[in-house]
Image (cartoon, rainbow, N blue to C red; front, top):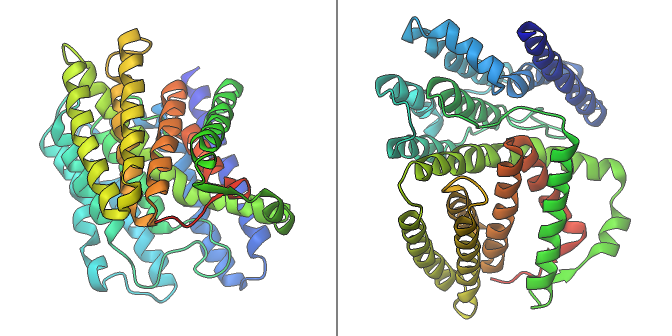
Length: 389
């Protein structure tokens, strides 16, 4: 029975990878044959790993084959580095230019850290290791890019994919964080939950933002101007290029670890108070610096989301800390989007973060949270920000 389940995991990962490869060929058939061959091979390998590495059966298999010797735990990260470097060399690019030369050092950091300091429960050092890995990962850049393909319709970045794989491997396999949920799972109930969360977010946007003049309706022109293949291409690009990356780290790791950490306390109240106090101040500062007349918008969203968390925690709908973790992660997710330049966008991103996080806690699966994320990001044909700063 176990072998049958493991075979099912392999077949699912291979099937999804082949499907993506077919879509990749459809949109890039005009690219040179050698580029299609090179990029296609890397796409198949990387997405097969992406769809299988986080599965509980795969995780257990890797643990059993590496627990006897710590050095074996470095084999997978070294393979990932080799995939990135060989892809760049195949295109005539050097991986050792500028800040990219530091890549192997921070890339191996979480695995080495977890091997040196083994813990059985979530501790605050886990969050520190996560930030020390994720911040350099988002700042570093390879001069010539690592897109699949390098030119043409992009189907993700080799660099970003291996950062996702490293997060799954380091925290899920080596550290042993439970319930990350990073694997494809076909479930109609989960799909319905994701769609309802998306529809709910759209409804809230119209209720809070559209009535306040923050967004404008722009459906007609966009729907006419975009054909179905273009919509599908953008949907695929967002899902594999943005949503999976952000949902793994925000929901599968940060929200998940916060929930486990707060759940071990005697009470959730202090965590709620600290979280509310810290993020209320951060929301106030962010709003004031971005747009003084509208500084209150991210503050209002912070109050509403933490109020919702307080009510749900009091009702004990989920295990202790579930909604405190959801509120903290949602506001954090919104605030890091300050780079968009719109204080309204920051507030709406926090609301969207609640929708993604709620989907994750109801499905315990990052892929469905990423689906809602993709649907939201693809909803520009329904509403658009009015350029507020």
